[in-house]
Amino acid sequence: MSLLTVKDLYVTYGSGPGAVPAVRGVDLTLDPGRKLGVAGESGCGKSTLALALLRLLPASARLTGEILLDGEDVLTMKWGRLRAVRWAGASIVFQGAMHALNAVHRVGDQIAEPLLVHHHLTPAAARKRVGALLEQVGLPASRARAHPHELSGGQRQRVMIAMALACEPRLIVADEPTTALDVMIQAQILRLIERLVSDQGIGLLLISHDLAVLADTCDRLAVMYAGRVVEDGPARAVYDAARHPYGRALSAAFPRVGDPASRRAPRGLPGDPPDPAALPSGCTFHPRCPVALDTCATEDPPLLRAAPGHRAACVLTPGSPA
Image (cartoon, rainbow, N blue to C red):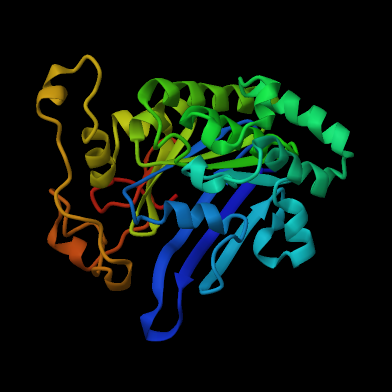
């Protein structure tokens, strides 16, 4: 059984004529011990998807479909069961640790809180566990007494990872966990996450706008545009040989080490993603697509088989629905 299965997930903000579709018919699967990357520009629905997995969206959001965590549908869980699943079954590493941590409490107390609530440890046992968690993520146990402002950006992000691991969840969702960090610290954090996933056999869903980071870290990669997955497949194959024009544009936007041509003339993607409240007809990417056909303005293709284990939602994909 898969650890996480998302089936035909829709997330809409508001209702009636002014409803805004943020996630549209997303299907994802993640097995234990595997790493799934989700990529796309700002506004494509990545963070909404992440928050939907544990029903952390505001009351204005309406969700339909299925989110199966170890076979149990998160969308139908009663509040008590959902509260038990958060932290203990699945946890989230949020973007920007300084905003996610409470500035007036010591980081050790914040890591201990889910242990006290979910595992009912004594304060002494919780402190011991906090020290072990900090050492596990490369920080001395003594840093438990620090406040967030006394730590560097990389150290705060390690605290967030320690907190996410506190109750030994089966799934970790990491939403842009390295966005505000320099390149060296980013690499350290990503290697740390990879090692923890490998050592503990947990599943990782890693969200980023950076295709290169995801290709280097994850097993599989899903590319989102305007709320839906337009390409998925083995991470390196999607990065090196994307089959959807949007996937190719994202990959080309990052200069490649050892490639002077891409460094001298990095290619971008003109225009902006569409307003979710006013999506274009047909394929939502066609107004920006360099190879769009006339049919793209009216036809919105499903994900088609482009190669073994690799799909793309494009009329130019010479495959069948899969």
